[in-house]
Length: 140
Image (cartoon, rainbow, N blue to C red):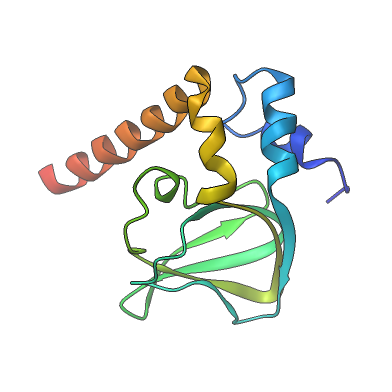
């Protein structure tokens, strides 16, 4: 992956694509890039670390009760709902076999942006989309 600015990467994901560039830059500046060795926990199921992570390089495995349920790759993100509710994590996310480089913003770093109506709107939209997917899965 090319080392483009995080604000440019935020423009490519559905969650932030429609936000003005200055808002995306503000979001990007509030977070930090972190690297994780293969198998290392990024977040742990039941943990209370709130925050959004965007996969920059490598991969990650999502586990629920020790069982892998999904894999994440460059451009994927997780934790957006924790920016709103701070509830314990429903899954663990572990760095993949080649490690992981991710950009992370904590709930505390992100909180001032919730006063921006467009930011609040995209997060609420993401929450609604997750609820709808969960309901569709239960209806099967």
